[in-house]
Amino acid sequence: MIKLRHLAAASAVVLTLAVAAPPASAQWLVYDPTNFSQNVLTAARELQQINNQIQMLTNQATSLVNQARNLANLPMSTLTQLQSSIAQTQSLLGQAQNIAFNVQRIEQAYSTSYGSAAGTGGSTSAMVANAQTRWQNSVGAFEDSLKVQAGVVGNIPTNSSAMTSLVSASQNATGALQAAQAGNQLLALQSQQLSDLVAVLSAKGRADALEQARSAAAEAQGQQNYKTFSTRTGYQPGNVTMFSGN
Image 1: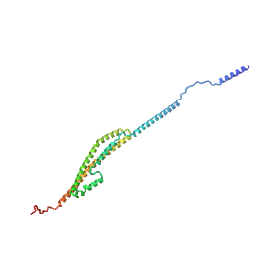
Image 2: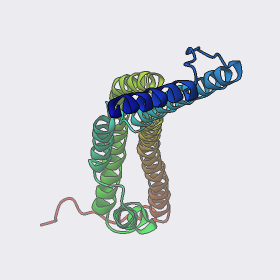
Image 3: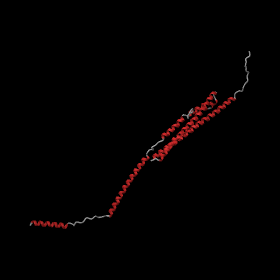
Image 4: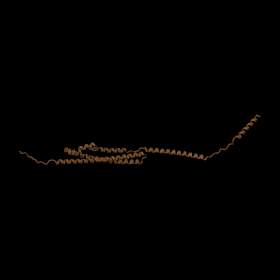
């Protein structure tokens, strides 16, 4: 009797749970257009940001490459050639004979060989020696001028080759520094050529000045010789005994 009661109670509980439990519903996939559009826009923005970052990195890499090119040195230099040419010209000027390119030497030479006392005073032998010295100075100066001109002309092929190389290097420069260095070396070449021109003019001017000074001194000496000759007394006859009387 008790078992029947328990069985009846258990049946009542199962029945109650069955009635109280909601029926199971089926699972359906729901599509939301608004949410999908937002997701697409978000993905597009993120992709654009990635592309921008890639472009920024590319620009930075290009900038670094350009900076490296702008800082690259010119792979050639004509400084040694220019210095050699200048040294050669200076050496020729330093070999000036008798009267060097020196203010004190010039003053001394003019006081002893070209001044008024040198052409009009002293003995005949002294005047002849001074005239000989002036002639040697003029001849030596003309020789020095020819040597300097020959040296400068000899520099022309070297300068032409250097100019061609520098112009080519300037046109093919990969950066600003190389172009600037090529331009600086071209200016240095121009300065060297101007120095050669000054040397030629100086040597020729020295020779011309010494020759003019020689001519002036010779004229002064000639005037003095004429004055000395013209002021001498005339011939005075005198008694001459050819045979002594015995």
